[in-house]
Image 1 (tube, rainbow, N blue to C red):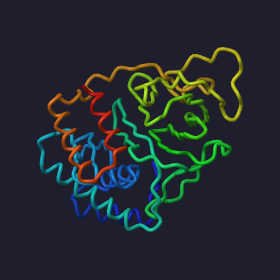
Image 2: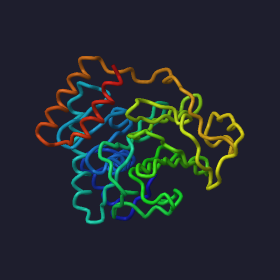
Image 3: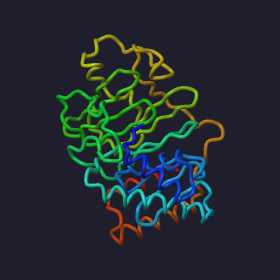
Length: 290
């Protein structure tokens, strides 16, 4: 989780007072909007009704679909954060992955509807500099998109066909072959599972060839069995076995609700509030729930 600067702590205090939420909730939403490049957010916090999504321009989705007051609160606080980032002269958005926690607990998501070339980590005066911002092998250059979830970090290098994953203190580099990676998903219930999305749909990370681990090329021997947790064994690559959503996880939205959301997104696209890439990424996410 990024560390707030003095300016960031002041903003959190102001947001807490202005919107009647705790400083923890305000911090959570600030990080979510920041990781959404200031234009979108995926969040999961009890004060905002659990999991939800926000996009600048009017699209707000919360777990309690008919709670207009909650939607308004989320939209207002996210809009204030978005405006603060837009007025931050140090804020430099970067491409980032779309991610979604499918296990228990609250972890934020990082949207990838706007990927940049040579982006790297975004920066803002609201956050203290990250000493591990450039954790990937430097010979890979500047990533097209970055993301993180819990203790796992990701960096995608489209031009070099490489994906770097840092977990358990180890840095793994994968050959992405002919995949155009748009996001990742990490499940945390009953084990650990990492998948990524590309033009071929959802794919297990294990299907990609390992190029190196901590800068050392893998041996010709068969790779070790993946552990149940990325940190469980320093000799194991991240577990990428398919997991089922845990008991009590939110069920997919009804078909009518998904189609209604798609129609709203189409309206935002027609009005120019979102780009074609943003619309396509969100459309794919919604259709995957049918």
